Length: 155
Image (cartoon, rainbow, N blue to C red; front, side):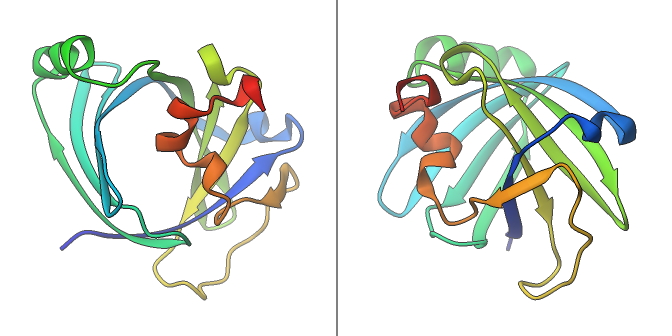
């Protein structure tokens, strides 16, 4: 069974750029969004995945992810996925013992920059980066599935 524990923070400055490990362009769309789970398809560079995630509010949730052919993902985005898509650039950024995922959103969510750190337990300590501000882990407005329905540029 897949399980994810992550904490999400708003990004307050550009000092993260000093520790970038990698960069990927991501496009994702939601195929289903129900009360108990969401199903999304994601393309990152030459790779694609189908992802199923429970809609639990908080920092822990079930998550299952499966690699799929990129051509299939493109077809799902074009024919099935809800619009607008989530467009973002994901940077992998080192801070202390952890690698953070930092997302700069484009399109309808332009201007939003958030960072997530994945943990092994809910109480695992981690170094807080100088570029991380308010924690929004439990603020559902920042969930990607909700950014499709209520984009950041309309807040």
